[in-house]
Image (tube, rainbow, N blue to C red; front, top):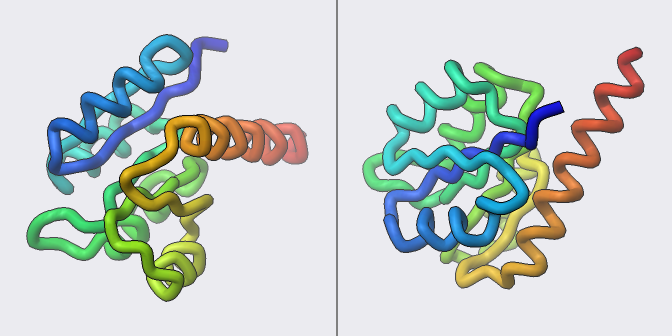
Amino acid sequence: MSSPLLLAVDDEVGVRESLKMVFCKEYRLLEAASVDAAMHQVQEEKPHVVLLDILLPKTDGLEILRQIKTIHPGCEVIILTGVNSQQLAAKAMDFGAFDFISKPFDIAVLRHKVKKALENLAQKAQSQH
C-alpha cells in the first residue's frame, strides 16, 4: 500500500508548513488554504486523515467537518484549533471528528493522534472483510 494521504486545511501558511515538516517523511501531505480547495481535495483525492482548522475565514469549521464526512465518510478528521473549548470539542466529536487538538500543538501528540486515526481506519477496513 502506498503511504497514507493526509490533508492539512488551514488558512495560515505557517501552520501548513509546520504540518508539512512534521509529516512529509512518513506520509503524503496535501494542503488547502480555503474551504473550496479543501472540498475539492477531499472529493478528488480521498485523503485518509484531514487535519482541519476549525476557525477558517467566513465559515464554520463544524459545517466543513459535516461536509467532509458527507463527501468522504471513510476519512478521519482531526480538528486543530486555537480556541481551547470543551464545548467545541464535544460538538466536533458529535459531527464525526476523530479527535481534537489545540494550537500550538505538541508535535508528538499530533503524530500520535494521526497514527491512532490511521489505525482506526485499518481496523474498520479489516472488520468489513
